[in-house]
Image (tube, rainbow, N blue to C red):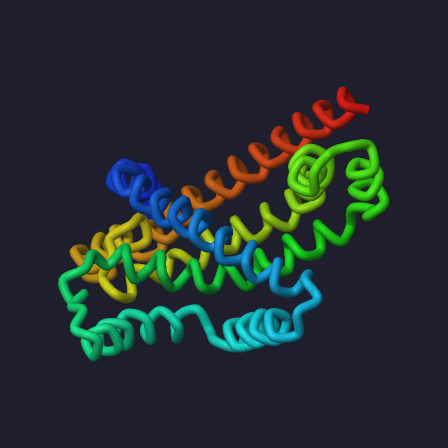
Length: 232
Protein backbone atom coordinates (compact mmCIF):
# COMPACT_ATOMS: atom_id res chain seq x y z
CA UNK A 1 0.00 0.00 0.00
CA UNK A 2 1.32 3.45 -0.94
CA UNK A 3 2.40 5.56 2.08
CA UNK A 4 0.55 8.72 3.01
CA UNK A 5 2.26 11.95 1.84
CA UNK A 6 0.94 14.94 3.85
CA UNK A 7 3.12 17.36 1.86
CA UNK A 8 1.01 16.61 -1.22
CA UNK A 9 -1.92 18.32 0.51
CA UNK A 10 0.05 21.58 0.46
CA UNK A 11 0.97 20.97 -3.17
CA UNK A 12 -2.67 20.39 -4.10
CA UNK A 13 -4.17 23.48 -2.44
CA UNK A 14 -2.57 25.99 -4.88
CA UNK A 15 -3.95 23.94 -7.78
CA UNK A 16 -7.48 24.10 -6.34
CA UNK A 17 -7.58 27.80 -5.41
CA UNK A 18 -7.84 29.18 -9.00
CA UNK A 19 -11.17 27.34 -9.31
CA UNK A 20 -12.60 28.85 -6.15
CA UNK A 21 -14.30 31.70 -8.12
CA UNK A 22 -16.27 29.09 -10.07
CA UNK A 23 -17.59 27.59 -6.84
CA UNK A 24 -18.36 31.08 -5.50
CA UNK A 25 -20.17 32.07 -8.72
CA UNK A 26 -22.36 28.99 -8.50
CA UNK A 27 -23.29 29.80 -4.91
CA UNK A 28 -23.96 33.50 -5.58
CA UNK A 29 -26.06 32.79 -8.68
CA UNK A 30 -28.05 30.13 -6.88
CA UNK A 31 -28.69 32.33 -3.85
CA UNK A 32 -29.92 35.18 -6.06
CA UNK A 33 -32.33 33.22 -8.24
CA UNK A 34 -33.28 30.73 -5.53
CA UNK A 35 -34.11 33.50 -3.08
CA UNK A 36 -36.31 35.29 -5.63
CA UNK A 37 -38.27 32.11 -6.34
CA UNK A 38 -38.34 31.28 -2.64
CA UNK A 39 -39.84 34.70 -1.86
CA UNK A 40 -42.60 34.09 -4.42
CA UNK A 41 -43.32 30.67 -2.94
CA UNK A 42 -43.37 32.13 0.58
CA UNK A 43 -45.82 34.82 -0.56
CA UNK A 44 -48.02 32.08 -2.01
CA UNK A 45 -48.02 30.24 1.32
CA UNK A 46 -48.63 33.36 3.41
CA UNK A 47 -51.47 34.77 1.33
CA UNK A 48 -54.93 33.34 1.85
CA UNK A 49 -55.47 32.32 -1.76
CA UNK A 50 -56.00 28.56 -1.86
CA UNK A 51 -54.58 28.18 -5.36
CA UNK A 52 -51.33 29.94 -4.46
CA UNK A 53 -50.97 27.93 -1.26
CA UNK A 54 -51.62 24.67 -3.08
CA UNK A 55 -49.10 25.38 -5.84
CA UNK A 56 -46.44 26.54 -3.37
CA UNK A 57 -46.94 23.53 -1.11
CA UNK A 58 -46.94 21.16 -4.10
CA UNK A 59 -43.69 22.63 -5.43
CA UNK A 60 -41.95 22.40 -2.06
CA UNK A 61 -43.18 18.84 -1.47
CA UNK A 62 -42.09 17.59 -4.89
CA UNK A 63 -38.68 19.29 -4.88
CA UNK A 64 -37.85 18.05 -1.39
CA UNK A 65 -38.50 14.46 -2.51
CA UNK A 66 -35.90 14.60 -5.31
CA UNK A 67 -32.22 13.94 -4.49
CA UNK A 68 -29.94 16.74 -5.62
CA UNK A 69 -27.98 14.60 -8.05
CA UNK A 70 -31.15 13.22 -9.64
CA UNK A 71 -32.54 16.70 -10.20
CA UNK A 72 -29.20 17.83 -11.61
CA UNK A 73 -29.27 15.06 -14.22
CA UNK A 74 -32.94 15.72 -14.98
CA UNK A 75 -32.22 19.39 -15.65
CA UNK A 76 -28.98 18.71 -17.55
CA UNK A 77 -30.46 16.09 -19.86
CA UNK A 78 -34.16 16.94 -19.76
CA UNK A 79 -34.29 20.75 -19.99
CA UNK A 80 -32.62 20.91 -23.45
CA UNK A 81 -35.09 18.32 -24.75
CA UNK A 82 -38.05 20.19 -23.28
CA UNK A 83 -37.00 23.57 -24.68
CA UNK A 84 -36.08 22.03 -28.01
CA UNK A 85 -39.75 21.11 -28.42
CA UNK A 86 -40.46 24.87 -28.43
CA UNK A 87 -37.65 25.63 -30.86
CA UNK A 88 -35.18 26.79 -28.21
CA UNK A 89 -31.72 25.24 -28.41
CA UNK A 90 -29.63 25.35 -25.24
CA UNK A 91 -27.43 22.35 -25.95
CA UNK A 92 -24.39 24.62 -26.14
CA UNK A 93 -25.18 26.43 -22.89
CA UNK A 94 -22.46 26.58 -20.26
CA UNK A 95 -22.67 23.80 -17.69
CA UNK A 96 -22.87 26.45 -14.97
CA UNK A 97 -26.31 27.37 -16.33
CA UNK A 98 -27.64 23.90 -15.60
CA UNK A 99 -26.00 23.78 -12.18
CA UNK A 100 -27.41 27.16 -11.12
CA UNK A 101 -30.84 26.25 -12.48
CA UNK A 102 -30.86 22.97 -10.56
CA UNK A 103 -29.71 24.33 -7.24
CA UNK A 104 -31.91 27.42 -7.55
CA UNK A 105 -34.93 25.10 -7.73
CA UNK A 106 -33.71 23.24 -4.66
CA UNK A 107 -32.67 26.35 -2.74
CA UNK A 108 -36.02 28.02 -3.42
CA UNK A 109 -37.92 25.26 -1.62
CA UNK A 110 -35.78 25.75 1.48
CA UNK A 111 -35.89 29.54 1.37
CA UNK A 112 -39.67 29.53 0.99
CA UNK A 113 -39.96 27.96 4.44
CA UNK A 114 -37.23 30.20 5.86
CA UNK A 115 -38.98 33.35 4.61
CA UNK A 116 -42.42 32.15 5.69
CA UNK A 117 -41.34 31.25 9.22
CA UNK A 118 -39.40 34.52 9.60
CA UNK A 119 -42.39 36.58 8.45
CA UNK A 120 -44.78 34.80 10.78
CA UNK A 121 -42.36 35.22 13.70
CA UNK A 122 -42.85 39.01 13.61
CA UNK A 123 -45.84 40.24 15.58
CA UNK A 124 -48.54 41.42 13.15
CA UNK A 125 -49.50 44.13 15.59
CA UNK A 126 -46.35 46.05 14.70
CA UNK A 127 -47.36 46.31 11.05
CA UNK A 128 -50.90 47.30 12.01
CA UNK A 129 -49.59 49.96 14.40
CA UNK A 130 -47.29 51.36 11.69
CA UNK A 131 -50.18 51.60 9.23
CA UNK A 132 -52.37 53.23 11.85
CA UNK A 133 -49.89 56.11 12.29
CA UNK A 134 -49.82 56.90 8.58
CA UNK A 135 -47.35 54.52 6.92
CA UNK A 136 -48.40 52.71 3.77
CA UNK A 137 -48.44 48.89 3.71
CA UNK A 138 -45.17 48.89 1.77
CA UNK A 139 -43.50 51.35 4.15
CA UNK A 140 -44.65 49.34 7.16
CA UNK A 141 -43.25 46.16 5.66
CA UNK A 142 -39.97 47.69 4.46
CA UNK A 143 -39.20 49.73 7.59
CA UNK A 144 -40.71 47.66 10.39
CA UNK A 145 -41.30 44.06 9.37
CA UNK A 146 -38.50 43.33 6.90
CA UNK A 147 -35.51 44.16 9.17
CA UNK A 148 -36.91 41.88 11.86
CA UNK A 149 -37.65 39.15 9.31
CA UNK A 150 -34.06 39.26 8.09
CA UNK A 151 -32.65 38.91 11.60
CA UNK A 152 -34.92 35.93 12.33
CA UNK A 153 -34.04 34.33 8.99
CA UNK A 154 -30.24 34.70 9.21
CA UNK A 155 -29.51 31.46 11.16
CA UNK A 156 -31.64 29.29 8.87
CA UNK A 157 -30.37 31.12 5.80
CA UNK A 158 -26.79 30.46 6.92
CA UNK A 159 -27.48 26.75 7.33
CA UNK A 160 -29.10 26.63 3.89
CA UNK A 161 -26.12 28.47 2.38
CA UNK A 162 -23.62 26.03 3.88
CA UNK A 163 -25.66 23.07 2.63
CA UNK A 164 -25.86 24.66 -0.80
CA UNK A 165 -22.10 25.08 -0.97
CA UNK A 166 -21.58 21.42 -0.06
CA UNK A 167 -24.22 20.10 -2.45
CA UNK A 168 -22.76 22.30 -5.17
CA UNK A 169 -19.79 19.95 -5.23
CA UNK A 170 -22.00 17.62 -7.29
CA UNK A 171 -21.50 19.97 -10.24
CA UNK A 172 -18.44 17.98 -11.28
CA UNK A 173 -20.73 15.05 -12.20
CA UNK A 174 -21.81 16.91 -15.36
CA UNK A 175 -18.32 18.15 -16.15
CA UNK A 176 -18.21 21.58 -14.47
CA UNK A 177 -14.70 22.26 -13.22
CA UNK A 178 -14.95 23.94 -9.84
CA UNK A 179 -12.74 23.10 -6.88
CA UNK A 180 -14.31 19.64 -6.58
CA UNK A 181 -14.03 19.06 -10.32
CA UNK A 182 -10.40 20.11 -10.29
CA UNK A 183 -9.78 17.74 -7.38
CA UNK A 184 -11.21 14.88 -9.42
CA UNK A 185 -8.98 15.82 -12.36
CA UNK A 186 -5.91 15.79 -10.12
CA UNK A 187 -6.84 12.36 -8.82
CA UNK A 188 -7.34 11.10 -12.37
CA UNK A 189 -4.03 12.52 -13.55
CA UNK A 190 -2.26 10.65 -10.75
CA UNK A 191 -4.23 7.45 -11.40
CA UNK A 192 -5.79 7.70 -7.93
CA UNK A 193 -2.36 7.59 -6.28
CA UNK A 194 -2.98 10.62 -4.09
CA UNK A 195 -6.74 10.41 -3.58
CA UNK A 196 -6.62 10.75 0.22
CA UNK A 197 -4.35 13.79 0.07
CA UNK A 198 -6.52 15.52 -2.54
CA UNK A 199 -9.71 14.88 -0.58
CA UNK A 200 -8.06 16.22 2.57
CA UNK A 201 -7.12 19.38 0.65
CA UNK A 202 -10.75 19.69 -0.48
CA UNK A 203 -11.88 19.14 3.11
CA UNK A 204 -9.67 22.02 4.26
CA UNK A 205 -11.03 24.35 1.59
CA UNK A 206 -14.68 23.53 2.27
CA UNK A 207 -14.08 23.84 6.01
CA UNK A 208 -12.52 27.29 5.60
CA UNK A 209 -15.40 28.41 3.37
CA UNK A 210 -17.94 27.17 5.91
CA UNK A 211 -16.20 29.05 8.75
CA UNK A 212 -16.12 32.24 6.66
CA UNK A 213 -19.83 31.96 5.88
CA UNK A 214 -20.74 31.39 9.53
CA UNK A 215 -18.52 34.23 10.77
CA UNK A 216 -19.88 36.57 8.11
CA UNK A 217 -23.46 35.70 9.04
CA UNK A 218 -22.72 36.29 12.73
CA UNK A 219 -21.30 39.75 11.96
CA UNK A 220 -24.32 40.53 9.78
CA UNK A 221 -26.72 39.47 12.54
CA UNK A 222 -24.94 41.54 15.19
CA UNK A 223 -24.84 44.58 12.91
CA UNK A 224 -28.54 44.25 12.14
CA UNK A 225 -29.33 43.87 15.84
CA UNK A 226 -27.50 47.12 16.60
CA UNK A 227 -29.41 48.92 13.85
CA UNK A 228 -32.71 47.62 15.20
CA UNK A 229 -31.83 48.79 18.71
CA UNK A 230 -31.03 52.27 17.37
CA UNK A 231 -34.46 52.47 15.82
CA UNK A 232 -36.22 51.58 19.07
